[in-house]
Length: 131
Image (cartoon, rainbow, N blue to C red; front, side, top):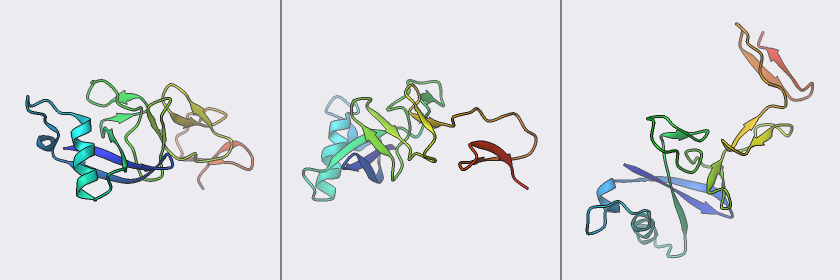
């Protein structure tokens, strides 16, 4: 199964799965372009922008040891950055900074090691205990 993200104004608005056999060319090789045309035809949207995404990629790491694909698996509300060819999750807090290598958001200070669960306190710019 392959997954594709529909993009409007650089925002992911839909994520769809397509069986791998649909993506194969006459030589049996999977092609992203075939999946894109399939989805455009299916939804009767000839100009829709679709990009393949990978469930196995998060923070620019492939969970099965393969090659990471587009930094992160796309989700609805994610941004697609064409220059980076990457899916970027929504920014969780105004103070967080994009890690250009992983295309994930990082807090301005590292989360400390703690035996109790912590949450980010945006007002104080601190990691606080959940009590």
